Image (cartoon, helix red, strand yellow):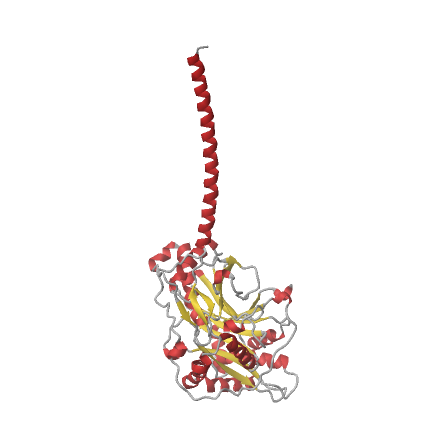
Amino acid sequence: MKNTDKNEIKIEQQIDIETERIKKNQEKLARKQQKVAKKIEKKQAKLAETVNYSSSEVQDWDTLDNTAHLFPIVAQEHMTNVYRMSITLYEDVDPTSLQLALEQVLPWFKIFHSTLKKGFFWFYFEENTKKFPQIHEEEDVPCRYFAPNSNKDYMFRVSHYKNRVNLEVFHVLADGAGSIYFFRELIYHYLRIKHPKLNEYGTGLSSETSLNTEDSYTKNYRNYTMHGYNTPNAYIIEGEHLKNHQMGLMHAYMNINEVKKVAKSYEATLNEYLVSVYAYGIYKECITSVPSKPITIAVPVDLRPYYNSTTTKNFFVMVRGTFKPEHLEHTFEDVLSQIKSTLREQINKDNLERLFSFTVGNEQITILRTIPLFLKSAGIKWYYKRTTTTSTSTITNLGSFKVKPEYEPYIKNFYTFLSRSYCQDIKGSICSYKDTLTFTISTVLKDTYIQKAVFRKLAEDGINVEIETNGVYYE
């Protein structure tokens, strides 16, 4: 073989060797690039958790309203200060569309797009820069506690079950009237995604929706000279609790016109009548001897109509309907007379203004404002426990839930209910949608004797009552 041929073979071998070496280096480099890409991907995912969905580059913050200062201090796992409102549709919920609707609506609502921060003197709101909260199928006890660092630090949650959409809200954000603005828009956007023909009626926020975040307590505060309250302790309902911290629900569905007719026959408003029926049920089932502490029902009063407020924050005050048993043979009319009288004495603008101005005035006392939060908390907890012993239970009335006519064919019903609080293991909630009034009793108590007494009285008055439960009583 010629030397030239040998050299050519040697060169070819060297080329092959070099090609193989380059190939291995390229494969090695590719593996390194993959590792780097994965690290970058992980970092990007971590950064995505803190994406700021606001158009502003600076995190926004806001103060809590006067009532809201209480809730983060007293809330705990089994006394959550969370309430729920639910909308039942005529069709099963599409989770993907509901999630998209939430992501469209949330950036508009500053309060719901917030997280709670602990300052030196008070808690405060700060814009939540984390990703949108995820909706989920309902699978747990209603009105669970919003534990710190959970739910991406959002203080509301949206869930669904079959044809029902649930909104649960930590009371620090808003009261029921404020949350309805958000919930109604969520449903509007969801229905437009599911039924594009609805877009012809509009694609943005509806005209009745408010984004107002003023503290209406402070805005309407008047300097009154008051020395506190001297409210006597109320009768407290006790009993065995449901297992595993469950909540029992009983919904009574009624025709609102029937209820109004019966209330009118007693010369009472609808609210006075239902609060009295509730108090009468407690009296009949719980009071076995006299003298007894009074049966006192706390009733939240929405202050917005009195001050032309459209705030999405809390703006309500508590009044109390009271019945004092003197013997064991009181009639319903006896109970109604006392409840009606005590409520009417309190529900007027002058008295309501005095009630919330008292608490706002205390908050604005300079020496109290400068006390550190950890010291304030002890006093607030003591005051809260003191005031809760003055009420047997609470009934809230959200009034009529109204939607635009084009959405009515898709919405079947609406209801709301409250979680338990200190000394109040059972509560009532009233609301209506179209011709249906829903009276919901929520409780952690195992026995249902109070619910039965309440609904039995409604039936005795000629009201057609349809009962629905969440099933915990049959487990």
